[in-house]
View 1 (cartoon, rainbow, N blue to C red):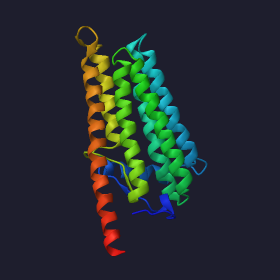
View 2 (view 1 turned 90 degrees about the vertical axis):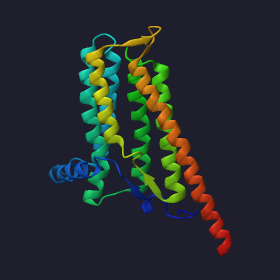
View 3 (view 1 turned 180 degrees about the horizontal axis):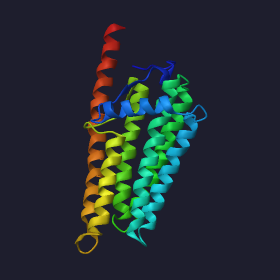
View 4 (view 1 turned 30 degrees about the vertical axis):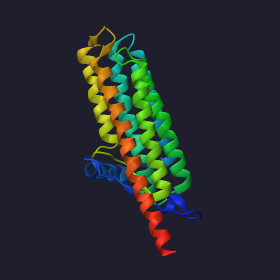
Length: 231
């Protein structure tokens, strides 16, 4: 566990147990081998943010024409490429900047989450308040991951065998369903199936935050008790 004065992010243990982790790692390693030297991790981080802007634009523009949802789907591909490749390339080339990279990467994660979920909320398929509930759940779970990284030295990148890549795939499937099914109102003409799905995911993320917070607090309490006994 990290203690005051420890080096911090240099000692982090990455915990990644999502279903697609092994296959994704092979793809990313192959891409790293072929990546031109002029492409840097910072450029890839910028590409990831640009992808999130494209996703936002696609969802927002779908209020006029649902065909713009294809733009959002393309944006997910761009965002995955930039977000997944920046750290992978830095580690592959052994040019990591642990503190800078950790700060920049997770700061951009917060921005991209805001863009994606606000875009979904501005579409005609999901209410903005429901999308913001999902955003709150995602950011709460992110806060837990960053706090646990500080106090435990563990950066948890997946929950329930799902990580960012699985989440992107789920959102792509949801977007395709929007194109096929339309708005699908079911209650009072205002709440759609998509509202229930996105809102349900938001509540699940909040529940995971509560469960993980309790589990981490118990670990820390046990650690503190061990310190007292051994002091």
